[in-house]
Structures are given as C-alpha cells and as structure tokens.
Image (cartoon, rainbow, N blue to C red):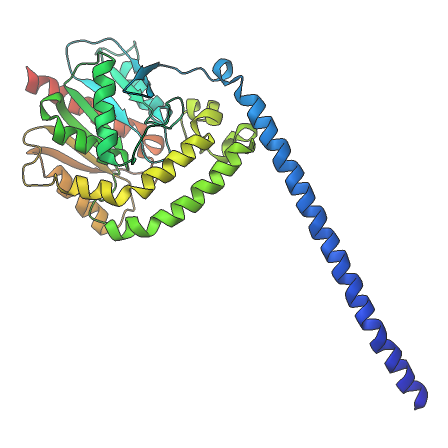
Length: 343
C-alpha cells in the first residue's frame, strides 16, 4: 500500500512538468506561426509595392483621365456618336467601369446595325481614378459624374444605367439634370428607404473591406485574381483585378458605405408621383429577391408613365453577369424609346 501511495505522488509531481512542457511547446508553435505570418506579410507587402511600379504597362487605363477639379477620373467611352442618346454606366459599391464590359461591348460592337456611344467610368478612388475629397455620398458622386462628362466633351441627353448603389448616383443625376437625361435602366438597385439596414451594414462592410484591403496590399489579389473577381465577371475585371480591387478601391468602398445613410436620404427626397414623367425606364430585379424589394422596384418603374419592371431569371445580384442579354436588351429598348422621344 505504501508503494502505491509513493507512485501516486511521483505521478502527481510529473504532471506539472508535462503541463509546462506542453505550454512551452504551444508557445513556440504560436511564436513560429506569428513569425512566419509576419515574414509572409512583409514579403507580400514588398512584392505588391514593387509590382505596382509596372502597372502602367501591365494594366494601362482603357480610357482617358479627366480632371474634375483637383483630381482625375477615368472615363472609357466607346462607339461613335450618332446624334442619339449616349449611354453612361454606373457601377455598384466596390466595382469599376470593367464590371460593364460585356454590356458596353455589346452596345458598341461594330457588327451591330445601330451606332451607339457608351461610356463607363470609375468613381473617385476606384481602379484608375484618383481619390476624391469630402464625404463620398451619392450626391457628391453625381456632381462629379456631371463634371466629368462636361469636361470630357460628352454631350447629353444620357441613358443612365446604374447597378445596386450606382442606381442612387444616376437617380440623383437625373433629378438634378433632367434635361440631360433621356432614360434610366436600374439593375437590382438599392432600396433608399431601408436606412436601418444600411446603417447596420456599415460596420460589416468596413470589416469586409479592411480584409479585402489587406489582401490587396499584400499581393494576394495580384497573385490570385479569383479571390476578388467572380468567375462569371467580364474578362477585364479578372485581367485587371490588381488595379480594379487595389487597396485604395477597398478604402473608397468603405467610405461610400459610411455615407450610405445620407445617400439614401438624398435619393428619398427625389421620390414623388410622376417624378420621371415620360422617360423610358426599365427596372430589373434579380430572381429570388424578397417581396418588399420587388415592390420597391415596381414602385420605381411606376414613377414614369413609360416604366417597366422586369424580374431576371438569374439570382445573381450582378444581373449583368448572370443574364447580360437581358440588361443589354433593356438598354437598347430605352435607347430606342429615348431617341424617338427626342425626335
């Protein structure tokens, strides 16, 4: 019995020692992991910094850089002016002019029978555009778009095509410059009435964009474009992912999200019966949207006596990725109606 007690005592004494060894081993593993992470982050940061120096050659701006008062915006216009309306594309939060590449090319393809002038651009801070001053709310963005088109010599009237948050920008443009507006195509646009949901989403978007910004700044996006660009995105989005989703673009997204409630209030103030008169308008909803979203989109179409609400077959919020032909046909429909109205 005495021997059994002694063996038990020895075992008890050994346990703290084993526990200490396990803790030391765990700390060493953690320290090694941190060291490796720091080394990889540093290497990625250096790689991205050096790689950016050659972006002018590897990822040249497709269009022109136009001064809009202290900073320059990238504008990419294709197709020849034919006397009809010019199409202007406005991207959603976090996206650039490349998001519209498929639809823009479809409009201005030389094999088509109609000659169409179409312009995509990057809001300040995105892709090839320089960062802009002040709060990044939809009102300021609409002002900058108007200044950009005027400075570039692009003359209206314009058919304004907006996706998601971009719908708010084009709606404010149309409200402020109605004589320069020929029609609207709104693709799964944000509900300006949902200020509570917008407010709740701001911290989430900030965290997401901080993660994306870190990935971009440490070379992850450059090495693995698919980490930022979806597989069904137009090829220019993936080809130029290092520029399209660079860290400054992600910072701009966070800034626009921070101003989203104010943007929504600005847009909400423009809503009134028959606000869009006889403009040709098409509002497209992605399939599977909640009833309140569909009702909102139908209500927007009803602001014009020539408005139409369509529901896509794709559930992709980026309808112009999942069902580009529907968006292309809608733009052409509004263009044709806008041309007849002008004539």
